[in-house]
Amino acid sequence: MITREAYMKKIRPFINSDLVKVLTGIRRCGKSVMLELIKQELLQQGATEKQFISFNFAHLCNAKALHDEIISQSKNISGKIYLFFDEIQEVQDWEKCINSLRVELDCDIYITGSNAKLLSGELATYLAGRYVEFIIYPFSFAEFNELYKTVFPNTSAHDCFKKYLHFGGMPYLAALQYDEEACKQYLQDVYTSVELKDIVKRNTIRDVDMLDRILTYVTANIGTIFSANVIAKYLKSEGRSMAIETIINYVKACTDAFLFYQVKRQDVQGKKLLAINEKYYVADHGIREAVFGGNMKDINLILENIVYLELLRRGYKVSVGKIDNKEIDFVCEKQDQKLYIQVTYLLAAEETIQREFGVYSSITDNYPKYVLSLDEFDMSRDGIIHKNIRDFLLDNDI
View 1: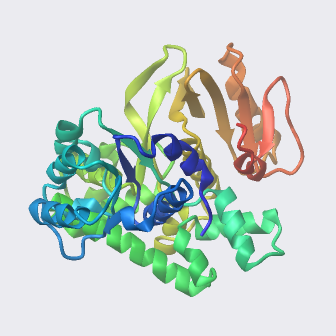
View 2: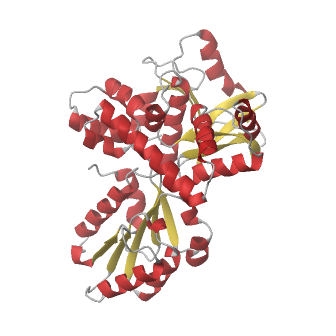
View 3: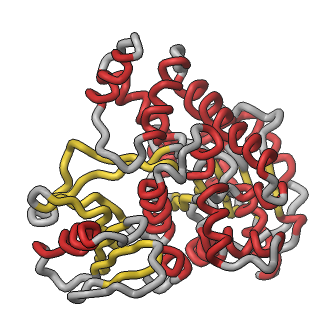
């Protein structure tokens, strides 16, 4: 188990506060381990295990039963009570229970869930302004590199990145010793679990075959301009038809389950977000390889996907930049920071170099501008920084 210090740095200031700590993210991305890391942190700060109450909801699936059980257990605890609820969305009306406990007990509450709807509707009503969210992602390359080398200690960063391109960042793969067939089976099972439990069941989707087709299309076309009209035409070519609004709702259900992330387009000159032609990236490129294959064939898109998720981990708000008829892969903003990023596989041809560096010619501000590729030599020019993608992923100062 690695410490995932990047997340602990964000969570640590809120420990022992009366805000409910909500950890969200795709199923099996490591949220349960984060709860264990928080417990370790609490023990180091002087709490005892007798003060912890934990649930993963195998049996208690309604709010009253959960509330009564916790009140019963709390009578035997002196001092502050630390409550840990894993995958709390399995409990009906859980938000009422959490709000009651927050008021009735001297407690510090941590909950995890695999659906973005945790933070909408009832939760917003009952806990408005009283919770803080932390989105947990699959392993970054830096985290993968750290854990992979505990299994294969002599692996170079170059070879480790090749494995990361293939396996992705789901944490449990280390327990499987990165065995090819075992990992593929595991990732396929994760995908099926997300689809059936977090998308189909939660949204009462009846046409699972149609959902499968939409999932296949979006996953195959990560990082490309999305249009529900295009998907409708694709479905029609396969002899199926679906309303545009239904397609949009199905894709929204996938983003709610953290399987996909939507990236809006921004008019760089007008500084406003555009309502059409967004892009989608997948939560873990290893799942894409295990279920659909083709990661190396689509290496440019996979590298974009990896960089995009890394930017989210680092706290950036990310959009796709539009400037005249050109496109900037990522416009990244965080507080008063801003940077631009282009991602490509290799700068092997002069045409590619001109395209990737030339897109910045119309941008006159002085924010950092990057071109990322797998080239080993520094090709920076005209104030534009070229960086190897592996080096970028391992450099936490950007």
